[in-house]
Length: 440
Image: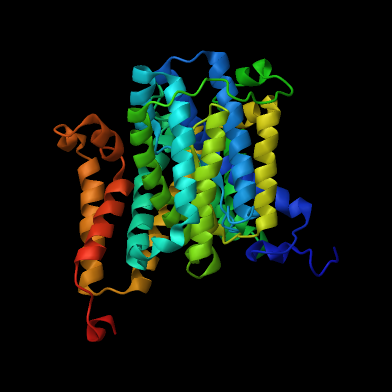
């Protein structure tokens, strides 16, 4: 490929080739931004289901492999499956609460069976999106994107403090490391040359990691126990098709589809300066569903678009598909070579929090910008205000849902995006349309 077509300037273009020496660092930056969040749902669900350490390690390995393959399909669609956008996929947090309920009651086999069926349902809905996508007006997408950003702020804050549940959570040591990492990101973004500014997060992660080593906060024991190469096992758990589990998980897949739409809209808006097309959203949802079904065959959890990486795109404006492909290849290698993933797993939470707290804020800003583009008519203000206030407010008081069946609690009690999505959809359907004067 000639020099004109292979340029570092292509990092700001969707298509085009970027030199490997530039593409690999930008791709690695995306992997580091999502790595801990990608394996955390596996660790939580495996612990709730009482899986062995060996089985948990195998699922973590599968999580990296599936995330990498899902990202590749999103970048370079297979038929109508995939968006063709710089979307990074990862294991979804949205399903954690329902799996922690299903696993101990019905067994892990019921989880895998529900994932396979639920994934197929979402995939088919994605392919048929042109028949129902019109009910999701831009103001609904804007509300969902804003809710996604707000819902992630606590995730960034937990990482900043050292990781939820950590014995030293909120310690001065974690505060110092998180603050140092954040200042490194900001400083690099201010003082680096223009073409290097998008690497601010990678710089912060690298410098923060080195600082953590000197502070004695990096545990290298996992590297010693990691194997060199290992292939994932197909059907490590026998799928069981329990109707109650399938219905519960299928409902969550609908919520995941809404998050997927919001992430795709935010990414196109913040990275490409345009709205996501119906074809792109349809392909993104189809990929989300069908690859999740494949993930279930490996015993792994569903995947979805990662808002962390949407925030990274919003902050850096790096949208090149070849560059993101390098990150996807790194994820696949981490899945095939356990030692590779073990090294990435030693990254302290406080370092990650120092970088992600600003990235998640970028998603909130992207949502607000989308609301601004929709206009501040009385109708739009009502939809945004009521959906966000109920979604964020109700999930801060989980006890509000105590009177509802367990399935309702699993879907809504800790998922503000699900509530925002439903309230925004209902209001968008029932509120009268603004007259032409108000729209103007």
